[in-house]
Amino acid sequence: MRDTPTWADPASHIARHTPDMAQFYFSPAILQATARRFRDGFPGLVTYAVKANAGEEVLANLVASGMRAFDVASPREMYAVRALCPDAVLHYNNPVRSREEVAVARAVGVASCSVDCFGELAKLDPLPRETEVAVRLALPVSGAAYDFGEKFGAGPEKAAALLREVAAMGFVPAMTFHPGTQCADPAAWGAYIEAAADVSKTAGVRIRRLNVGGGFASHRDGVAPDLEAIFDHVAVVTRRAFGEDAPALVCEPGRAMVAEAFTLATRVKALRGCGAVFLNDGIYGGLFEARDIGMGDRIRVIGPDGAARGGEAVSRVVYGPTCDSLDRLPAPVALPGDMAEGDYVLFDGMGAYSRAIATRFNGYGPGEAVTVARLG
Ligand SMILES: *Cc1c(COP(=O)(O)O)cnc(C)c1O
Image (cartoon, rainbow, N blue to C red):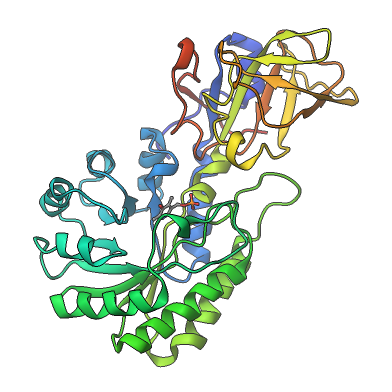
């Protein structure tokens, strides 16, 4: 393990330092355990979608856990991965690229690219022919927090035509899809895998690999999603749909890989008489995603001494620290009635799309992550 945590958990750090800036707590042990869970359970190659959290300690701990392949979307992500792992395999799965970006992809030797239109496929011509080119399929699929197919992907007919062109250009043919983020329903993957088998058959092109994307839901409330049920379904449907010609499988989780490894600790700046709470972080910081997919309920409150608040829950309007009136969580949050100014509101499962998106608007935004042995 790369980092040796200095602190047992967030509460002990808070009790000692009473940080007045919002703060992430990071557990390398949890991240590495999640990486093992994917590696042991997923029936193929596990890659990490860097955009979910490109923190150096995240990438370094994934490399330490044995991860060697990464889904990158931009030259900066390529360089960030290669800086920590010079022999990392790069899958460049942002289907829209400038010609300059394609030149970088060639220079760093990306192994695989996704495409969803002929114009973008033509732009890949400078790449060596041992490069894998994966046609990105889009279906109207439900079950995710929002639909990735709206922006990227080709419908089945166009995907078949693209796949033929990929093969004609001499690239290694593959297919890919993304069922949408925060998806807990194995059937979403199953529908895509069956459609991919049909596309491959229609095109008359045998695909070397099928990348089943990311989208694996993280634990936001209630019970944690059953990743193994998704892994098993992916294996079963792939065998059934492709038979003897089954392609090797790849997945590229972002959220589910990293979410559990971070807790965001915010502090109560003020409690208004009306019950409203002002925190030192909000939608311009680590809570950015709340606007789009809600908050979940993995929220707890501790006092400055590290002791948990346990008063009966009160529903409160929660504001962030900036002077912008939009800086407010989208719905009231149930928080302990005995919470007080100076307390800490901890949001668990915040490793994905949180620090990666947080701004410095108005001089706020979470500070560096503090490494801990455990988060609970
Ligand atoms: C964002 C993204 C991912 C990761 O998605 P999660 O929902 O975080 O798992 C994987 N692949 C591609 C192409 C993406 O754009």
